[in-house]
Image (tube, rainbow, N blue to C red; front, side):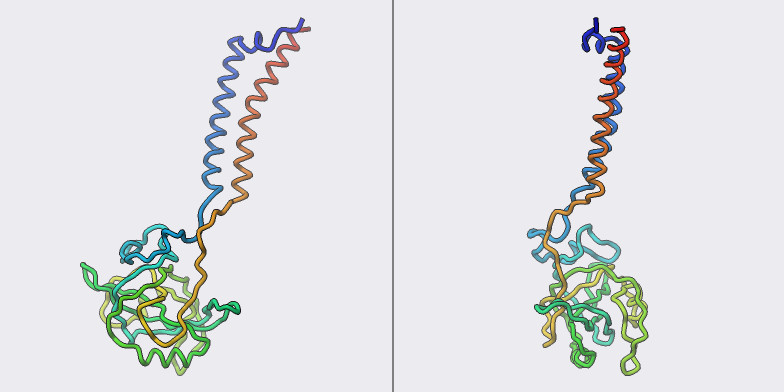
Length: 252
């Protein structure tokens, strides 16, 4: 006569086997939770983050707060028209799609408690270099209370484009711009700001695509999550299968 499942399972060796299976399942469950935490993530800017805040809350010389990019910030900055440059290969968002053109960028100084700091500002977009040259000639050297999007430095991109003997930059690379800015040395912000309000230049403002916050799923880690859950169940299945084999052996 075949013994009952529970009469076999409550034997000390199978209780120990169940404890071992539970331990293995716990390890797999922890791995499953780790993968699950990496499966879902929020990307983009939430409604709470859409309101402008002081730039000091997001970044400063030597630091950047997590989640600061694509955030609106306000800052008081003094333009330096003698340190302006034109950047090639810029994309502008318009109603009829993306348009390629140029940016006008400039150095500015922000007065901090520890002294002035250099902050790069992206001021305007145009498909024609001449338009930006004209705007640059009329830039005032004065202070503005501006609002704009905080953006990370681009990698350095070389360009062989020149205009009237002046090089056109290939990217907004802060490491490169620090070397181009002349005069007294200042500490620098590790970010730049795309100005959206506070300076009226009579030019087309820069428009970039700012994503609203949305939930993003990493399907690879989702698969791994299910895989670890399966392994946890297999640990208990193997214990059950061994107990069943023991029942069959005792019945013969």
